[in-house]
Image (cartoon, rainbow, N blue to C red; front, side):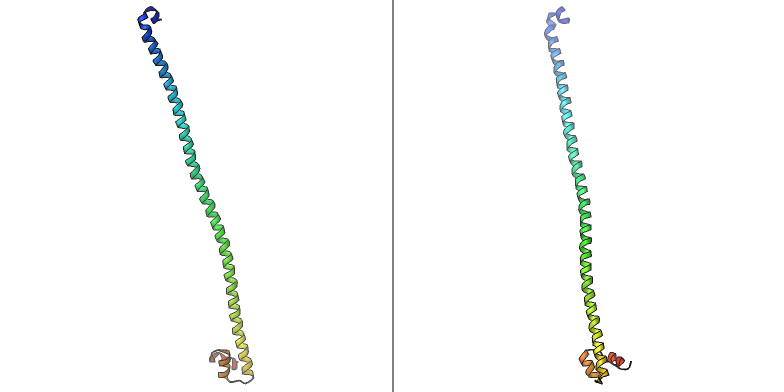
Length: 133
């Protein structure tokens, strides 16, 4: 309207409109770029959160697996040690009982205390107790 009334203002009006249009376009580009930046930042945050969550889950699973594995290994090792220990104790008791039986038989046959002590490896006190029982 002003351009028709004042033709010398036509070019400045056109430039002003063009500037206003460019300003709007720049604003739209800026908004779009900000959205892209926001999306990238959001994705990056999701990655960070996902890594942290995955790391925590991995640690928990690893800890649970380690505990379970440790328990099973400990139980197996404990059983093995217990069986070996029990066998050793049983053998030791069997040997001690056998020595006592040999000593009793030898004493009943009239063999001297010193000879029985030498044969069985038992203390003289133990053999004397056996003799006088």
